[in-house]
Image (cartoon, rainbow, N blue to C red; front, side, top):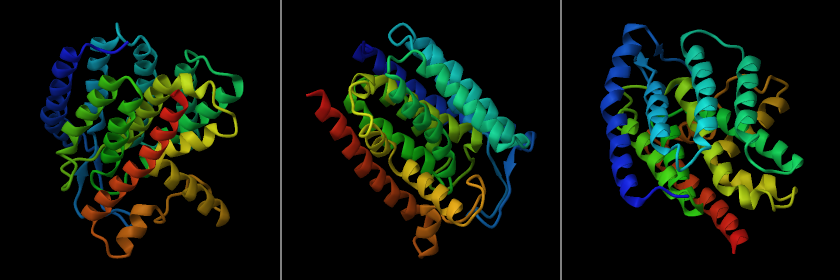
Length: 297
């Protein structure tokens, strides 16, 4: 059941203002406790930048959950899972958490939510891999100012056409408030806590919304549909894994082969790289949404 439209017009501006007005507090907190990102070979920023804006997204989402839980009981599970996701990433922002430990937490959070979704066993397994992959994909795509947030906003706005419109648009407004501080000039970064949180939230709410289609889709076509719905972050992550395995290195090892790196290495500015990838994201996700909607007819 949807929120009443009048409630959306209250929640959306408040979420946007939350992101816009609370982010400066997270910047001060990150500077005070040295939760910062230093310039490096694979990075485009040239100065030390705070990276704790993910806490704004997490707290804003939990506040929204209190508002939305009656209409959408699934937010209890997603809110709990997102807390595991956020804290594992936030811990990694402050100290080092092994990739396998993070992967285990991401799988647990995905399973925690998916137990509430009626899916056949094989569909459950595919969706489990997709949510876990999306959680990490949004982290890997975060290599240029505003890129991760725009990937999330674009996908959320387009996915609202499937249903749960006010849910997707409200979350897009929350991310939009933080975007002001991250693009085109980054006064703060999301950090791993924020990027993985966005990937988890989008993938869970997408599964929650599209579950009637997912449960009837053929097993062979389900990965293709979800690949399109995942858009640029999923495609970039798949290519990164294949590239690293081909080179005989760990799929978790960092490199400068991501699509945004390649575009900037070709001479495209960081600003136009982000804008171009946002258009690609819109095109790919739109195709995925079209195919999902076609199955509903």
